[in-house]
Length: 239
Ligand SMILES: [Zn+2]
Image (cartoon, rainbow, N blue to C red; front, side, top):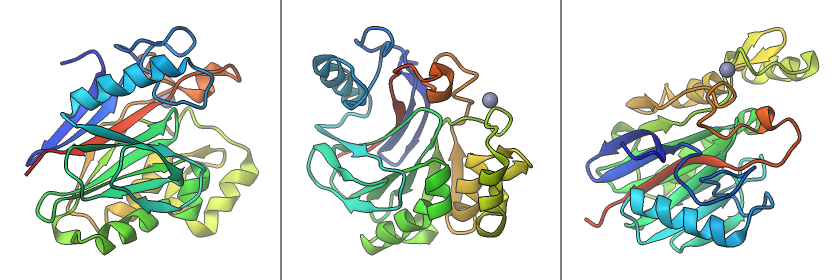
């Protein structure tokens, strides 16, 4: 397996790859497969890294999420950096969609029958705002059907490592209790899957803890210093 690939799911010509931080061109502290243009990395390195990722999923173009920790979703058909939002949907073949993350949960949706793909990004704010349902709604509006839909979850910070202020845990008590794993720990992946599991046919978890696994970018491990963003990339081959 390529050094860039943390995990992979392929379903009828649709590829989903969770990305390692290795096998790119960026220098420290963005070493080396940083895909975010907003963290202070050399734009030429980011562009070269996006080319590497595009090749991994055999895409011709790549559209990168511009996350803002909300629940806005965009339908896209062109490469580039998307408008601010935390979900992207496309029916376009050979257009890779990238959800950037470094502790937050990158997730994807695949309908191989109706040929629609989507990516989402959920940190604690996104889980509270239910970006998962917003993405599903837009995915269905674009022609997907739940009985053909499978989900992919990428690596994120684990519940054990994600200790947060007690007040933040309390915010989840009424809204999304599935995400609470202790009085001071949140399980973001459970928060995401609690919404998806009751609706899609299957969930593929390419999970590992971003903080514990040094092959992955982690915002929290960087402890205030700049770092890169990896995440999840999905693309559909030409039919
Ligand atoms: Zn952990």
